[in-house]
Each structure stands twice: as structure tokens, then as C-alpha cells.
Length: 373
Ligand SMILES: *[C@@H]1O[C@H](CO)[C@@H](O)[C@H](O)[C@H]1NC(C)=O
Ligand SMILES: *[C@@H]1O[C@H](CO)[C@@H](O)[C@H](O)[C@H]1NC(C)=O
Ligand SMILES: *[C@@H]1O[C@H](CO)[C@@H](O)[C@H](O)[C@H]1NC(C)=O
Ligand SMILES: [Zn+2]
Image (tube, rainbow, N blue to C red):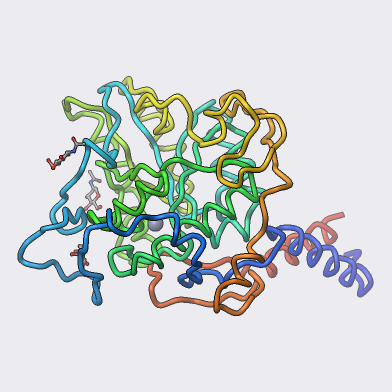
């Protein structure tokens, strides 16, 4: 084996560089914890239009009356205003993947691109700052990007200000990574009520839930969950005679869940469904705020960006120099500035892991490369 200490050192330095480059530049709040609130962002929402629903202290406690249309309690939806639950056309199927981007996403992207399929990714801000290149690859391949909060906390347990911070920090990270602003979001656990909806609407978001849940995330936490159930569920679902199409929920969070696409895509397509990103199946012209502009003005910052990109062609994004990193928002908040590498695990997160194995795996990968040659 041609393996000695200098090679080891070289490999270590190289992998440290790879690791450092993988981070989204700038100062960001600690990952996987509710991010700091910010007055400038809070002012974007007219609180007189936000219903005074209770901020829930303990998750899982449904009151006797559902006065605020709580989806996770009663499956109540507001499809006439904010909520998108399924693709309206019965021939359409919106595949969606949550909780990434992760180290398992690139393999999924390779498969989707080999089949020329576009899907929707609901991304976590904490994962975006860790894997910005992967987000860029999702975007450039023509997949739709939606917001899935910064810390994956159930939104009905958060104050109005905290909900706004969850959305805006994630939005800022996405803007920084790919230069555009999503128009859809998915609440973690589907936990949404009229208070949360009123905030999201004012921030410019539609709420995308789902009508077909694979529960695939359980495979990461419960050893009795059989991953083959995902395929089994799709096989059953495509046989149903429903008046509408569907939006299914999967996760690119775990290796085995990200690996289900090559099994389920043929089932969905074999039954005659057209797989589409959500914006296409609901007939929206554009998946982002920016690409609805023919001019070059970024409406969020009022700054001038480069050429507006038609994302459907998969062209490179217009990255705006005017989009700032998190520094200014951290400075005007009470939170301590922390490097994104600070991997703070929050109790609020259940089916979210973190990428603290990334460094180790980079080292091993590069070492094994040198051991082979
Ligand atoms: C909404 O439903 C979830 C899930 O059952 C529950 O944990 C939460 O407390 C409810 N929120 C409100 C505001 O009722
Ligand atoms: C949407 O539906 C709700 C409940 O049925 C109703 O109260 C509300 O007025 C409707 N909003 C619009 C804009 O149609
Ligand atoms: C569908 O998934 C559920 C778990 O979410 C499982 O209990 C059930 O057996 C699955 N159905 C099939 C046909 O595999
Ligand atoms: Zn999630």
C-alpha cells in the first residue's frame, strides 16, 4: 500500500478544505435550533391580521374545538386561500422530498436527472448552509425549491416572531445559495393553523402539505419500520380511482429513504401519472418570486440583480451581490453569532439528523482514494 504520513497529512488538509468550502459563506445562527428573531423581519407582518390562536406549549395536545383549522389535529385545510394538498389534475403526481439537502441527496439527483424527472424539495435552512452546492444542483436541474424552516420546530408551538424568523432565515440562506426566493413552504409535521397561515401568507408563501404520506422517515428511528412499505404504499395508491392527482411525501434525510425513488418512480409512471414539481401541477407560472419579474429588480432587497434566469431551462442562477449573509440580522438581534459548524442539537427536532459525520467521511473518502492508487 502506498500510504504514508505525508499522504495522510495531505489528505487531511484537502478534506478540511473541502469541508470548509462546503459551507455557505457568512455568519449564520446555530443549526437545528430556533433562530433569533429580528425586528426588521417582524415588521413585515401586520399582526392585526394574524388570528390570536394559542401558542402551543406541548405538542400533540389537540383541544376539544378546532377553532383555528389545525391540520395536524383535524386535517382541516384552507384550500381556497393558502393550502395546496394535492395536484388538481388526476393525471399529475407531485413527488416531494423534505429535510435536505443532505449527503444522500446527490445520488437521488443523479437518478432523477437520468429519468428527466422534476420534483419538489422542501429544504431546511440549517441543511442549506451545510450543503449549499447540493441545493444549487437541485435548483439548476430544474427541481422546485420550497422552504421547510430553519430548525424543523412545530410552528404552532412558536410565537409569531419566531415563526417569521424560521422562514426568513431559511429564505435568506436559499437566496444566498441560489439567488432566488421560493413561493411555497411546507410546515414541519404539517403543523399549521390559521395563525401560522396568516403569517406565511403575508410573507408571500403558499402552504404545501400532502395527501400521500410514505412515513419513510420512521425508518431512521424505528427499526420495525420496513422500508419496502414505501414501495408497497405507492403500489396501492396508484390503483386508487381518485378525482384528483396527488402530492406524496418522502425524505432525502436518510440513505434508505433517499434511495426509494428508483423503486417508486416506475410505479407512478407505469400507472400513467405525469410527475411534476408542485408549481407546474397547480398551474403557477413561476416557482420563485424573481422569475416572475421580467426586469432585474429583486423585490425583496430592492437591489439590482444580474439577468433574471428562466429556471425551467436549468440555466445558471442569477446570484445577486446585494443579497447579504446573516451578519446584519445577527447583529441586530440578541443572539450570539455562531459558526454554522457549531452543531447544536435541539430537542425540538425528531426526524432531523445532522451532518457531523461529513468531516469524517471526507477524510475516509480521500484516504481510500490514495490507498487505491
Ligand atoms: C395542532 O395540532 C397538533 C397535533 O396534534 C398539536 O400538537 C398542536 O398543539 C395543535 N395546535 C393548536 C394551535 O391547536
Ligand atoms: C375560504 O374559506 C373559508 C372557510 O370556508 C371562508 O371563511 C373564507 O371566507 C374563504 N376565503 C375566501 C377568500 O374565499
Ligand atoms: C404502507 O405503509 C404502512 C406504514 O406507513 C404499512 O403499515 C403498510 O403495510 C404499507 N402498505 C403496503 C402495501 O406495503
Ligand atoms: Zn420535515
